[in-house]
Length: 236
Length: 332
Image (cartoon, rainbow over all chains, first blue to last red; front, side):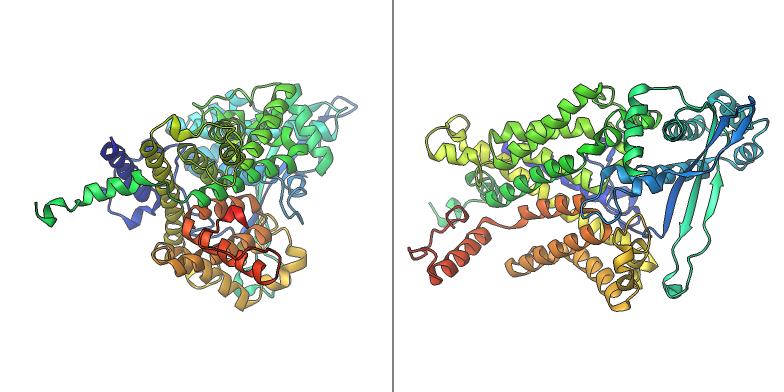
């Protein structure tokens, strides 16, 4: 019995060891299958490596409201990450909720980078998508489906955008609860820090911004909206 | 019969080593206490934001959650109403505190793990390395006898109010699984440090000694940027912090081979984690790492430390009886 336990433990240690090291450090032939480690025992210990975080990434969201004449009025960008950072700045033990959109912006950029050039071009032109005629998931899927891209890439992009629009919808409805939200879009702002060599320079490099396109606001979930509204009011 | 014939072989010696005594009981107890407090304090501090962080507010991430790596895990907390969610949240705090004080330790460790995971999978987007270490260490702690020291269970057992585990389960079986847990936790910690250092060596910024400057110059990983910005541009600080963390992580397995270097590793890493936790605003990660590192401190080291403290108190006249050879950390 003891020997059997020892053998299982030794195998687990070997699998964890090879999974925890960077792929280049052990030959592929010596790496046992490690799929069973996922997700509970996932080994990803990059921890600010290889390249440490070197920019502030923010999620911006923008509303399009119905105006008094029945038209559409585009509102100002709202920095959701800045709201979240209120629970991190000058806190010895920061709020866990303060990192949600920081992580989300990584996913958004990753999904965007995973699209084919044709798909990115189709989304950039945003054929027919305006604040007055925003896209729904079906429309975006249609824009992406022209190119010959794997389905999982398309779905990954759609799921990430879909999640972002839910958050954006609830944040914007919190800020102006009495207005009718017609369309929503997000942007990812990337603001690099000064390079080490330029650390004494007066200003940081200019931020870049990648805009998404206008989406139909997300379906309402009263519990979700109430929890997000509560958070936004306390940290705005 | 010759002496060679009666000498035990390697396998017998190894089997005897893992089944005859339980390793690192004080270290496991310290890990249990620190993890329990980390979970409880984290949830208490985040209580006002609980709905946004793990509750109904986190449902905006539903499309990602349902297709991510945790999609197969039960999501009942994520879909629960506010009352049930808050009940689970409070239950997690209670379970973690009971685990920390060591009451019904094995059951409260299991409860802490299950309840924490049910909260965690509701918002996997905010997962950190600390969450990964926390869940793995909790899972390994379940196998261990981490309630044998510094616990209410141990007190109740000593007072005869609790039937010892060894009366119900064979001692060798308890020792085996306890020691397996120690090996698994220690190995996981080593792999975190070694893996992380090898990833760092792939970047020029870590090798040239400037890596720490970058996250400390962002708003998102530098909660004290307004007050301490001057420090983050000071070359000796940045170089020292970058290289010391790289070196100590890389040579960590070697430092474990000797008692005195093990102590150096533990002290340096604890300082490094506290520094990272404070300066980068990731205190939960730091606390979890310090808690897991505690397993690496042997019971002999705990007893020596206890004896040193006891001797100092005796010299100061704070205790009357002269310290003997059997001073234990419980008898300070």
